[in-house]
Length: 371
Image 1 (tube, rainbow, N blue to C red):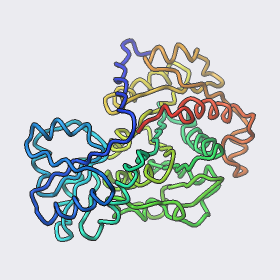
Image 2 (cartoon, rainbow, N blue to C red; image 1 turned 90 degrees about the vertical axis):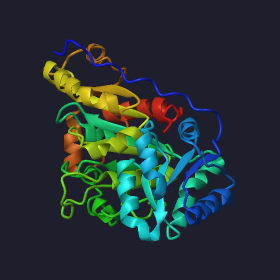
Image 3 (cartoon, one colour; image 1 turned 180 degrees about the horizontal axis):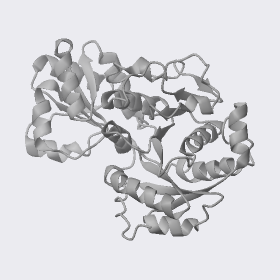
Image 4 (cartoon, rainbow, N blue to C red; image 1 turned 90 degrees about the horizontal axis):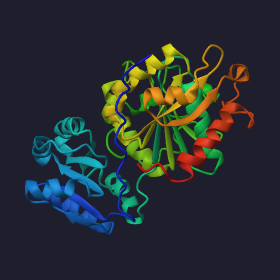
């Protein structure tokens, strides 16, 4: 049992009410500036060009989005600014390699102009209404076999049943595929291999992905993914696009998170760590937590109980020094339902379905998650 619980991540700051209409535009390239300023002006947004480093530091956090010209990327990297979402590295069409390289280093989306001007406009369009980003909820296991993927799938289905546009994103390339859990492995649509070269804003992914019971599913193509990890630039492009078109993005993250998964953790307002209610389960969850805590804004724990796993959930949460999000009770019917191809969370009276409704009531419907 761990004796020194990890420090809790700092609570997320509350943002200003209403839409933020200022976009930070950083470039000394006259042609690039003309393109960027025209896109910003066409959307009714204001451009802040931050001519000095002090002005840049001051405007960095508060801007609704940051457009960094490839010519200014080295300057931005040298300032070692705080990590934030909504950053785009923008270059000309003939600066592809340089733009992509800086986007990867700055953990940003890549945009090539003028070719991708419509995509950039689409990424910024939500700022006009103040509804530019959907909510991102990440689930990961504190040890193997705790039902993280089933909980992620059931939570996505519960939110979709409540009338929300939901994307279930599988970020585990060796996890077997969340589409199998939903019985959607045979449905036509794009898998992760289709996004191997994805950069920047991808538009609305709905209609391109398999859809099951109102949930758009982006799963791993088990026959086509050559790498053991998904690329950070690809993950950023998909997350930015999904958050612009969907109300909720539920991410099933592997226990052994790859460095590329940092982009997912940065965008998540809340990460749910699923921990088994026994001594070894808590010790394993504690080891995972030490790596997760510095990379997340907010963490909570879901405690998985079952035969031989009977520690009090409150004791588990207190030991891990995390808020208790809920308790996932063992349900023998869940395995049988999976073998039949039934999605997790059915029937509605199951322990899993009840937990998902509780989580939706608190984390989704109340608007507590703010990306």
